[in-house]
Length: 283
Image 1 (tube, rainbow, N blue to C red):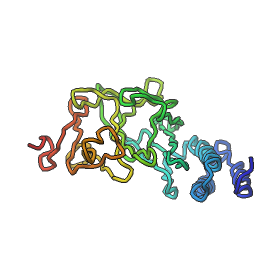
Image 2: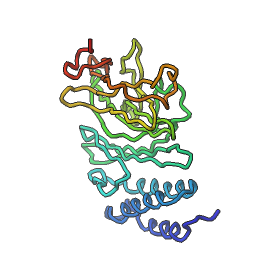
Image 3: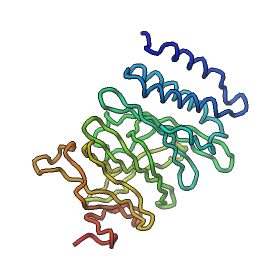
Image 4: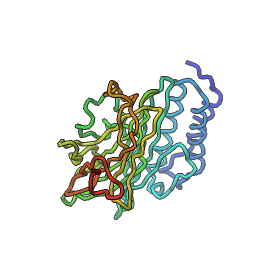
């Protein structure tokens, strides 16, 4: 199969080959410039085949870069299409982006780069987005090979029975009709492998392993951690009319707010939040 931008495509492939990062001094500028160039090229083509091919190159370069111990401290500020939040304790960071396709769906790509503080060595995990194949995602414990994809923009740290758990806030562009916001939990097992989801969300007399909000792609939803209130605060979502209950393309903020407060090893839902008195529901 031929590519519309075949000359540029071939050039980029040849350009990447001289970067055996483990075998020589860590170099960052040329490969990061190449990643940014690839993102630009993806934005200029309408071919999903080409987008996927260019994205594979981006993934390949990141793998080479992020296996270098020296890369952990590098900010990647020049990469505007990539999220790169650190954990509050700097034990790991996330490198994360999405690939929009012509049918309105998106694919998500993510690396978790952990740092052994004593040894000053990194370990790299590549996640596999399985969002559309996961039934009842709010009840599932997932791993790097079966990941509920999204774009992470905030990492919180809590301890439960002496173990670190990291609460993640994420955005997921679902399709042309709906968008999702996600509250997930990341922890690491005894072997150091990442695990997603934990039974720590207490809401509506149920315990969930993650929380997913879905709403109209034409609307916006705030989901953030308020440092002053020490709560995860978010817009309450509702359909425009009762006949649209369960049809999330008709959901949006109703001008009220809910929140999660970390209490006794759980994130506890406080509904109809009065932001003047955040520990009490509005009367």
